[in-house]
Image (cartoon, rainbow over all chains, first blue to last red; front, top):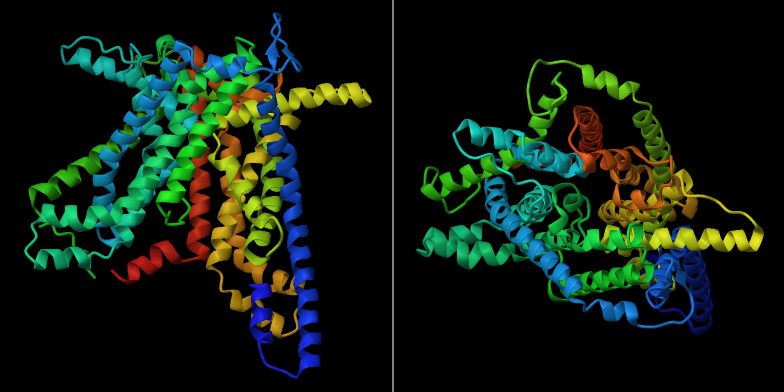
Length: 310
Length: 287
């Protein structure tokens, strides 16, 4: 820590003139440090301003513009029409369906990930690492390919349907339904839930559980009073990591969903590629961003994240 | 040290936990296994198994559209990884080792591309390039088009943040006294960086670069928006095919893409193991 170190060494009492000269020197050194830091930060700053902040501004501006009859965006005649359309019953329906699907995905992930993370965290260290790698591999492999695998599995002549027919049942037609989308989303985002839960449980002081048992708590009580409260940061982190990307999911519904399962992500994309209504699409994007920023801020304010990256 | 779980080894709760775990792992790997198996199926019809063959892999390498898309992917990944790794590492150094004006805003700005939904970022960049090109045409009569250039610029925009996060984590673990000791021995700031900091954070930089490479090679949503006609990347090309249906050719391409990501994971685990020696060895010690 550059400047901090200088401060520490300078805090020695000296005769007036020398101390003043020294503090002036320190000020100059600190200013030079700050300038150097700023210069090192500058390239990324410049890049993100040009290719992130300005594009964000353009979307904000477009959301107040008008769509001409030919589908062009007219950058004059500013209005709130696109925002008013956000309350159309179709938009509200899509928003609710997206929220519901994201919520269901998060809960299902939690239901399976928690016991898995618990199991992993309570194994011998060597086995623990093998299991961790087994979770990491799907986490790192191509998302599109993993989603496509489910299209192969769930198709009308795919293995799932064939298996059901071989067992004397009906052919199962899951593809292009909400169920297929939820399966795909759970599959895609489950590792995001397992990893923070595992981190929380693995770091937990298990002697606390032992203490609870010594005080005659049964297994369930010990879990409810000790383990669960201590794992809450992992639960919250995992839920946010699943919930937020699911809200904006586009690839999964596009591959596994059908015409009746439009989600927010599809809907925004269709405004730009098919409907050619950029102002409305921009307003939708702004709405989605606000919801997610709100969720993220709530998360950072209410819960202190463990600060561990994935 | 044995782990205290509050569970007896053969209790029903313990059995339930084990069953759930193996079910989840089956869920993780069954689709991948099915995909790999079917990619070696000779039959045109994906669902009906006839005999093992490498037929579809041969077709992949003969398919000019796939090969062209692959080439674009590799060019974009190389450009965006290089630029994002340099800019991201500099940003991480500035944030962890310096104090400067606007630092908190800068910190927040760097997190935004990670938090923001991909669809939104795709929309932003599409409008930005479309508007920018129109403006450039009017101002200086130069009208660039969507293609490898716009894809690379977009990938850099999201990759900088991921590299910064990874490198910062590494810098945070580093003992600042090492750099102070170098300074006490009259090393300049640059010498301390070259001699001490850079070698020590290199595994973090490599980890960040690998993450950037993976993200660039995998991206569909943003690339789909900023690609031009005839300049798509492999994932975007495959995405287009996948939406139309399931074919043996896609199976083979998918397995190749999967194998590529496995190689990247293996390399990144190798880096972590070799440099930190932390995750596997130290855990094994207290066992």
